[in-house]
Image (cartoon, rainbow, N blue to C red; front, side):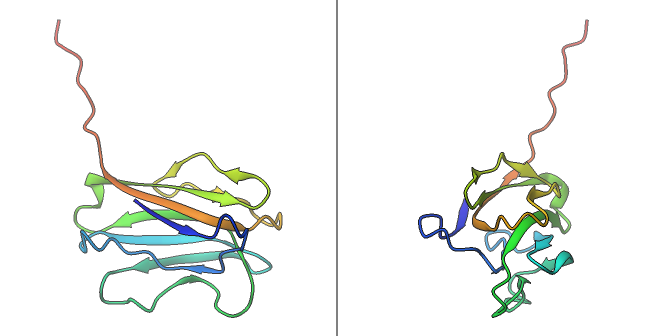
Length: 130
């Protein structure tokens, strides 16, 4: 489990980079909302080929306000990506997964922490035959 941010200091997160280093064939996509810039397109993170890539801004002091995450790659259908964000003056959101939006849009409520978990999908249980 990976958790980033500075919750105690209540400092906004300006940019993120996320990789699945234990399973490099899984690539993580991110998109979301940046303060004053609005919606941003998907960014694909692939370890170790593009370690310098990030989502958000650098040096502009524009906070991330909301994010979505998805998995790509040959084994992406075998895993779920679950994430939640810590919003200034609100606390942790509920967990979101597989591309659903976590955070706010245009409310000046920056993300100050992010928790991400990649887990194997649970196979649906079948009901016994009658």
